[in-house]
Image 1: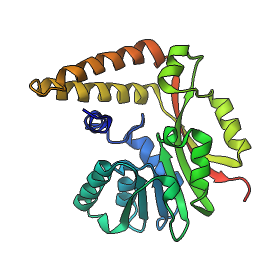
Image 2: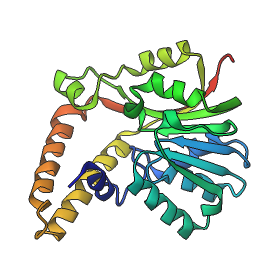
Image 3: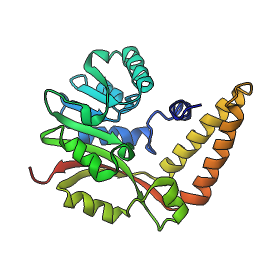
Amino acid sequence: MDREEISRIAHTDHPIKAPLGDTSVRELLRHALPRGDARVLDLGCGPAEWLLRALAAHPGVRADGVDLSEGSLAEARERAEAAGVADRLALHHKAAEDFRPEKPFDAVLSVGAAHAFGGLLPTLDAARAHLAPGGRVLIGDGYWEATPSPEAIDMLGDFADLATTLDKVSDAGWTPVAAHLSTRHELDAYEWSWLGSVADWSLDHPEDPASADLLDLVAERRTEWLRGYRHCFGFACLVLRRTRP
């Protein structure tokens, strides 16, 4: 089974692909979209859950999503039709660097997709290219809450601590105007949801050739989480504005 299908199964009960609860998502969108008629772009939108929630909450918002996954975009279109917001959502199957919109956006989102751009600062560079003057970026990425082991770095990447992360963001010309640090409950709930959804699917489909392998994957990820990075990994979402043009 390919990684995209595993991710679809893993996020069955947690469509936001990040350790955030519904209230946190709602508050972050409120800060990122202070106007009710914004044009919003999500770079690496996947099934476009952030955009669907923004469109549902703000009838005047129009949104674009960019992603390389045809399957995720097809899912987004289907859900947008079901929610009655498809007329305000445009989806683009292409790499972010190949996206050439006619107008800049009032808000650019990219939560949990920094790896696709090569890190936090390259993601901000990509967002800046599409941001209108005075616009806001909502970005979410990991950081180290405690000193990680070499194994944790190998698993998740070489993040910085929170203070250093914010120093880098500031030095790159951005000012945070709102933020959310995922709570222990949110971090744990996300992991348990991921593990439980994949385990349930495997146990419900014992005849599938992938079933046993997925149960092994669940056991491996559970060990990596509990013994590898649970004590040191944090997740921060920042709402940013340009400090200077």
